[in-house]
Length: 308
Image (tube, rainbow, N blue to C red; front, top):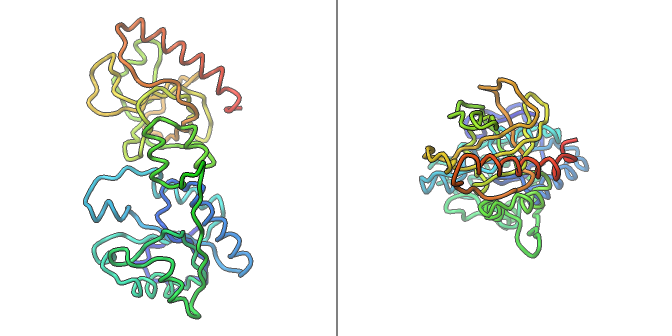
């Protein structure tokens, strides 16, 4: 798959394509409806398969605010490569892009790169002040491209959206998140050095730098962690380790069952399977150890089949 920054590179060699438009944070079931339409149309029309997104969330840039992502750009690339997509078009979001009129946007980023069929959601907006929408695309399609508009997707009468995913994660409801994604929620990052308090009490952990991601509510989770392509069952703690009372920012630590390898510096992926409990402060280290033994037993009893 070719990754092409449309507002930086020439597009001489591009072939006609069917492309889904949007930010696609999380690639939830609503997003996947757009992906499915691209797969269907590209096959019928013999077009290349593509997706157009932004390097950062427009709201984050325009409001100059920090933004926690459900997926990194690298995650999106991996997701699309598994579906044999041909193009990922990326727009670097800046004030110049934000000030483009919808017609300019269409000319430069749809017609010029030979996008012959556009797929977007019913609530997609683009161009200056978000003035462009699916109706704008249809009004300007003429003979240059065609448009498919995907209607609202719901789960339990609630619109499936990145905001809904974040609401569920904020509540620690990773099982609802799985239903909205059609897969387990995951974050990735490098293994970094921690305080090694877990090792001192018989529960050694790997500390993962995943703070660019939107993380679930603090607590203990049954997880699957992937290291060098191999899956392991584990127990993750998200939070401040209040019993030790030393951390000033959220830490993601995983106690990997039946594992004793040096993985510092490696990139790992953590899949959140089930919330076990919320984080709490214990009155003693012995009380903490007793609870961790119960947590590990529960995870092994309830999640072991998922790892097979």
